[in-house]
Amino acid sequence: MTTTLTSKGQVTIPKQIRDALNMEPGCSVQFGVNQDGDVVIHKVGARTSRKPDRFDAARGKADVKWRTDDLMALLRAE
Image 1 (cartoon, rainbow, N blue to C red):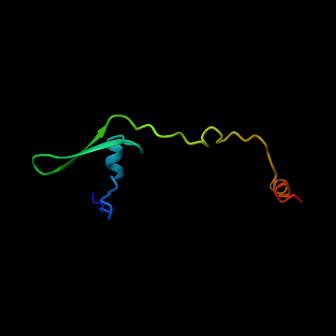
Image 2: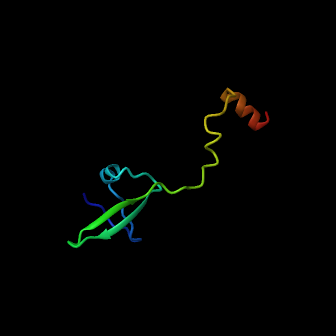
């Protein structure tokens, strides 16, 4: 598998590798070089905690069934 180094020194870990290591967004990784000069990547512990999305709690909760025409009339104050 080949990937390209960006001008910022970043690379994308190929999907097959991410899947094999069960990596998800937010995972910490550790890079190393072994005695043969090969780069080694290790998954470090569990996923890092990130700030919860403020919209997650509201997602899928709307129970008002607006018709588009009614909603547009309300928004346009017609």
